[in-house]
Length: 438
Image (tube, rainbow, N blue to C red):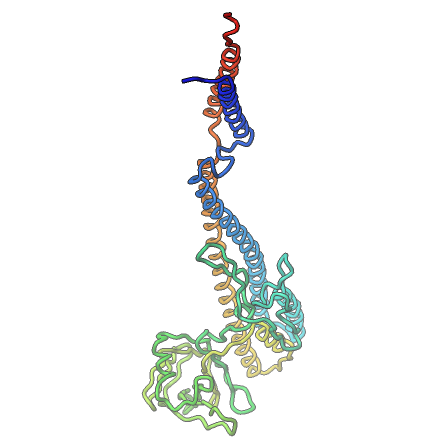
């Protein structure tokens, strides 16, 4: 095969250029720390890098959302802790107000203290996040949720919504608590039914009997009784009444149906639905009717000795806000007491009822607080998982992209030798000439 001078020079030049390009590529790899400078270097790996990078970026956004949710719920958690402390302080003051040694001025001083607690509670209810959104307004983050005072009704301008953050591909996490759930919709009494001394007409009970909140022994029986064929016109109007009588110094009670009709008009007279039974102070009174035969699966206890004509009412629990409970306690403590035992007994009964409602508020706050704590614990686990995923993605990207410096340096050195050899051999070959031998 005949090789011309131009061919020899062209082939040598191409070899040198090829070695220089490879050397330059290795130098670029070492300076950037990347094995792949373009997708052409490894098309399969480049496609995987794109997929893993996208997954990593999405995980970074989820981690950011988790951090935002943790920050918001952490603030909610601290506000709930402050609310719990405030309510416990209020409870202590209410218990103190029940002492019979206190005067009207002492109770009024406690009422003033409760007004300050009321204002503090309203401030907590209108708390804002670092972004300026109200924590307890539902979806209405820019709307002040609660308005009112201790001397006027408190209204709620928010809604029942929970603002959600996407914390994983399949999971959303609430970042707030609806004020309606925390402050407004709290079941009074024991949560199923409420009890109260209703008196006889315009007069309070004359005896010393005080009814306790009562308890439900079988919730299924209670629900079944409310849904039975008993002639009540809806559970919101249903109520039972214990009426007391006395014969020859022996106190007795009888259970009556004191429900009211749905439509407005004259209330229906109470109807006896049980027999006359002897009363024993502190002994459980089962809520069982005989006309018709219905067992409510519940009981109440009355301590003290009711007088003839005294009545106590049992009705299904209704929703009451913590602000209304506070206002009713303040109003009760502001009202002066007469020296008679009857009025003091009525006061004690009402105060006990408010204390029961306050306990329901504490139970509700504890429930919400526990839920928020569960969210924070779950977010902590998700954050740890996101960190682990981020490390895994980074390792995968490193395996696909990063340069093996030991191999690259070895290849660079070898390529330098190849280039030098090509250059020297080109000089030697290009120097060959027949005219030297003529």
